[in-house]
Length: 401
Image (tube, rainbow, N blue to C red; front, side, top):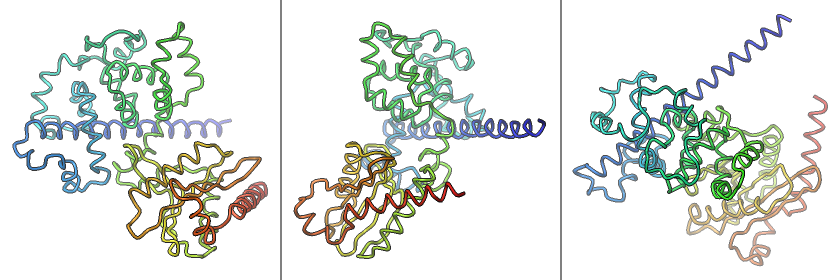
């Protein structure tokens, strides 16, 4: 009995400190990005030599700071962060103090003057998070209200404590302050993951709520099915990994079966020979300010083209092929060299029933593909048989463990 208590104590201690570490990383990353955005905007508005850089400012800045993760696109997001959330300045002194950063000496002095003018932006600095959160629980805002009263904005302390930087990036897509505040509140109340926030925005949750007679019932039903936010997601985000100087590819969490299958597919393709050259695994690409990962990337030295392989531990769905086509299109537009042929995508799906492999051509002439490429690539039948055999062998192995 005492041993069980020891086990529980160790687990609870680990989880507690892990959550605290995640919150700390999130806060430092979020504040850093906000401050970088502030510096950029201030330079653009007041910098005497801003005209020398013009539209290429962010490119030049990224080239000169040489910090992992601070690409021109990331700097653009930071600038957008500041412009969308200027009210965060009111929470800055307290949050920096918590992190042991001297606000007066380590942050640009110009922020002090900005802070003096920020008293009407949002919440009082001295208000506690618990006091502020009570406003959220008391329905601080409802659909249809205007935001002319800035006190209706979600308090900065709550935003920083409840949302990750990845959440903020999703909220950037909302140009109207009313919508942004609505989704902030719903996301906080429902403890939505980043994926869930994106899904609710894309499925027009605010419009559906506006048309609903029973808004509370809609909220309840939505949150029952919602993907819940886990603080560990912060640590595993691409932005956190770059911030900590870790390899971004390590952020991709793979299930045991998926990882084992990818290992075998990689070996299988290389053993086929015929010009396959391994290039990357979990290849990170950036499309519309969002990161995506391609499971396996090969370059075929005979066909002179990239071959992208995606594995889905699921039955075939059209969105899987659409996603792969997007990756193929990206490689065709952004990676393909003049002497290269168009890239090819191979989708490998599996579930308890039918297994299949499908090719993604993305604008390629299918007849040309069949006549020119199929002789060098494994057939769909070969790939399907390979998946079936590997799944059986992996399951047998696990059952005998």
